[in-house]
Amino acid sequence: MFKRLLVPVDGSVYSNQAVAAAVNLARQYQSSVWLLHVIRHLSLPAEILAMIAAGEVTESRQEILENSAEIILENAKKQFESAGVTSVHTEYVFGTPSKQITDYAVSHNIDLIIIGQRGVSSEDENMLGGVARKLTNIAKTSCLIIK
View (cartoon, rainbow, N blue to C red):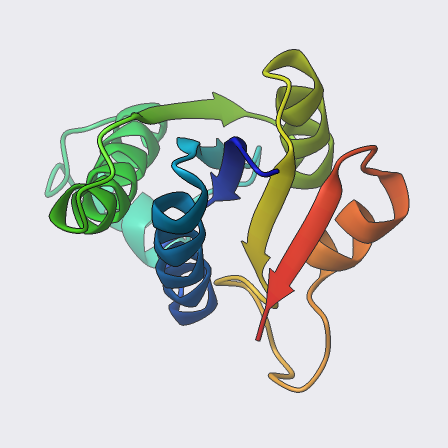
């Protein structure tokens, strides 16, 4: 039924809960899994920009965000591998999360998108986050939102 799972990850608590749920589904359905991290076109916090300007941080904005994306993806991938799920693909892209996730789902013939209720930029933990809310409106793929 769900042979191709897409799990957008951002390193948040809710994202980690979505990964845990996806691990169980992947084992149950013997699914292939695609882990996707979307790097938004936003500036870094002022504190990090100040450290870059002072020479304390020598990486560029893009390098910092790409390195962070790789760590987030690798941490999620390890959870699947620890559970015996071996068909796990990782990728990061740049852009608007809801658009990138839906486009990725279509281009990779995904059966189910599994996403956390909220992300790292969430304010009210009882409300559905912006990306999850948009996905339910625009995705042509079924979505499972994990609370």
